[in-house]
Image 1 (cartoon, helix red, strand yellow):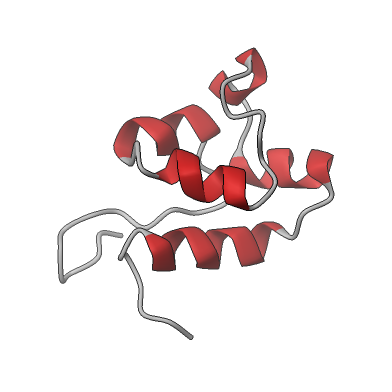
Image 2 (image 1 turned 90 degrees about the vertical axis):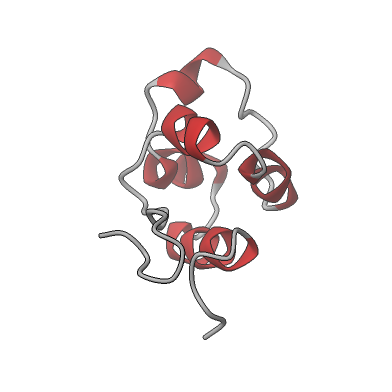
Length: 77
């Protein structure tokens, strides 16, 4: 569902890393801040954000919240 304020789709854990980077190139910096330094690796083309977080031992729900907040897609909780 698109964010009504800016007509942009919020990030969710089922989205592929590559899809997120295509939609929001500025997300690269945010993802690297979360400990996801492998955003340029081939796995990012077919790995969901949730799966990548699991591999890196990072809480996917927290990353989704942080990404959406930093990208201006949701308000702070």
